Length: 149
Image (cartoon, rainbow, N blue to C red; front, side, top):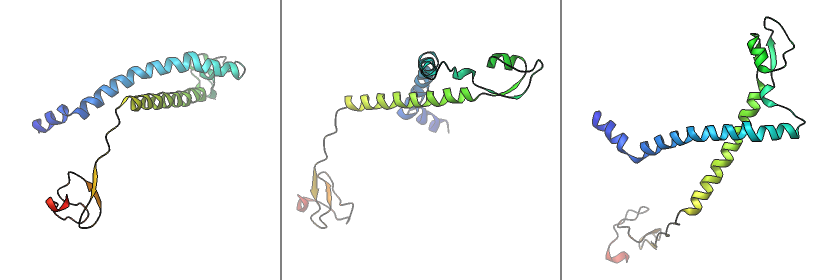
């Protein structure tokens, strides 16, 4: 079991996953700052000065009671609130993250070298296209040798 665990950890996929999680966590703080500090204020300004982080519905009043000017005031008073503004922020953040990841993958794919097309030939027995290096046809299972060349 220890040997299997060492093999699992030593595989590139596990290490790649770990690196991806760490980078993802760092990337999350950048995106949150971008959304909350730049994009949402611009959207709020376009929509007439709306602050999404302060959008909430009071479900149950607190000790002092409404009206509550801000979400902080409502929660400090002990009111139960439904914070739908936080949901709007989360949805916008999701779409921004998805867009940035899409653009990154697109850029990385452009940097990769295109793979050379695999040289193909036809099986002399069933005429199925197969790679030049094949020694057995996957379709008819015929052994390929000098006759296939």
